[in-house]
Image (tube, rainbow, N blue to C red):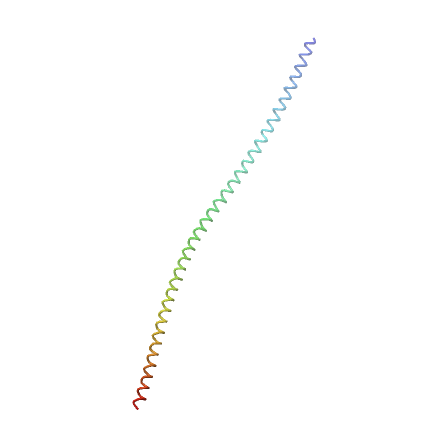
Length: 128
């Protein structure tokens, strides 16, 4: 009888332990399901963020290409303007030299005419 009682107590103890393990398994399963759900949600958020960042990156790359093209175009315009400025400077210098030659030529002609008139006047005075 005592052995039967002991066996019944062990059996009850085993039932309690089995029930406790069953409750623990259920809690673990709920926690696993909750973590899996949280993980899936976080993965979706990360995927969405990655997509947004990818779109932003592509937009920035396009903008950078446009700026590079605009910069290259502006460089061409600047080079052309610089060449035109150099051409104008060369023309200005050539014009200045031409003007100096004309002024020297006019001055020489004026001096020559002055000497000629002076010589004529002197000749006319001496011949009187």
